[in-house]
Length: 164
Image (cartoon, rainbow, N blue to C red; front, side, top):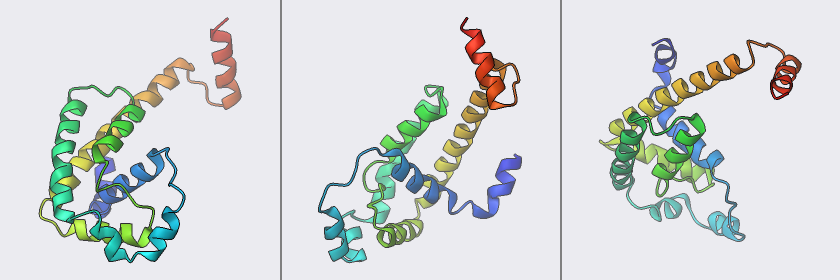
């Protein structure tokens, strides 16, 4: 409850920032050569027109996100990294950032005007809470494995002695 109260003023922007951040940092593929010059020549409107309608994008993504949420609630994802990887796959498509900052920002603004944006925002808040719980459980498990060691040298010593 405390975490939710801290972020309540930013609740509108958290899902958008989360989606964009996860897609940007979670993707390991590089842009193809020549895409930079193409995106420089295209206007923001042209770049976002290729994505389609923002509200249709959200509607299509909600269906994928609902399927993801069912799996998440069933406990299929045991690690936060697994949850994040699956979320990237679920959000892939029209919500994936292009790498053009102005176009991506304009796209986020146009999506926020859709009626179904509240549904996706609520789903993203649920995902965020679940990811935080998984991360906390992972940290507690690491703490148990290290025997409560506080310094990195102490942790490494305990881990190396544990295998002997």
